[in-house]
Length: 113
Image (tube, rainbow, N blue to C red):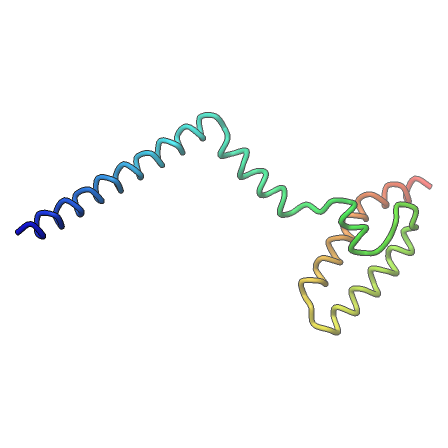
């Protein structure tokens, strides 16, 4: 009899705790959306995952700030072909993104000359 009562108390207590947790979580989400915290966090995640910095792009391609666009293209072609042969799609895409990043920086300069 005591075991049955104890089991009922444990089940009821865990149900109450679960409902309280869900309610607290909903309230936290509501507070975050009022403050704009949730939206800002999502935007930062999107920005962080898609953008490559210039320094990272230069490091991937193994070039410096003084490297000409032609040399960057040579490095890109070399690394892209090596990774195409070895079958590393991840590295190949990183090399391509690095070239795209540096392209946005170098192309306006090259067009102005």
